[in-house]
Length: 462
Image 1 (cartoon, rainbow, N blue to C red):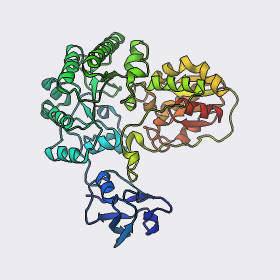
Image 2: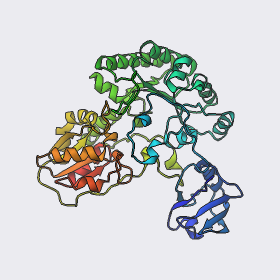
Image 3: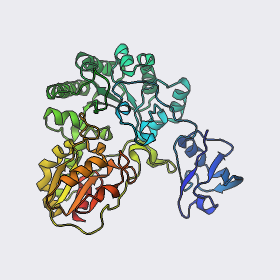
Image 4: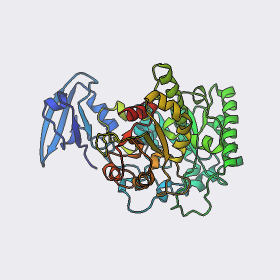
């Protein structure tokens, strides 16, 4: 059991007024040792809070008085204080098993913790879920949660998870839904394993057995060159088209029976299938935007709104950590650098957008429209993912080494290079190179910008 440690103090806050400082450990709150930031938040919502604090080996007690529900004014260094519930599945398609050695240790941690699902939108299989967990989730209404379904056939699911509990753990999904907890599901689709007739059965049984699911995302497996599973392969273009058609068919069934579409295929499947990106209405408020579903449509709609001078409607983020004042940004929500990797002076030439293969297919058709809005010439350069290889082509998995190679190979004029900030955690890429190191190979400023049209335009105009 570790204790929550203060990582940030808001000036003028109740925490600041009583002398709390970065590095302080909170040993107890009103006599309770919290197990996670969720419990912490509930404890500090009261008007009078008794803290036991440790600093430099010394302990003392302090009482804070504030308005009920007012934030204490600090952020903690972690969200789970007791122990992260790790994953005991051995899914053959798990991307963590496809990582090369030598990367940051945090990247190899497999969690299956419902608390991280609530806080950050992480997907859990529920194979380690318990009656006590269900009681807490229901009592505290910890939703939405995000559950990996993969297949409703018990034998197929347990085989995919390589865990016998995979055959029975969806009973917890039913329990969550029956108690009114909002849950979003996903199916990671592996050709020849849970596609075809098995996928059709999954669609049908979800409608019958789990009709209260808020949404279900259908996403293809990512396969890196480090994969060691001989029975895994990527989808063919024809298979991608078949999956999109099946998803759209079952959308219509769900719409007729449940009044909503429920099922959504990933952008990756639409791009591979060569199909038209669905309209905004068909994504029903983008419930799985951060799962790579509807990102292209959200970008296109944002562009159209900016062209019309209309107010932009951003897609609401999943996960609740932003509403828990003390929760740290973790995982794919980690803070990104906003710095400029190569000085402030612009070079001569177009602004260059560096993006993955799928990002390029989304941006190339709107390049001229981006030029008109920004008043700058723009080039789109595809960064091949040699680091991971396989079918990894999403922009969020671009690494510093590959961006460096693209910069060295780009001999055309450039005023600035833009990269999506989702490639970074702090100022470091997945391969642990820093943006400063990568910028040293750039002939113009290298800027990390938000993955939005407004972010691209701001970077181009800078």
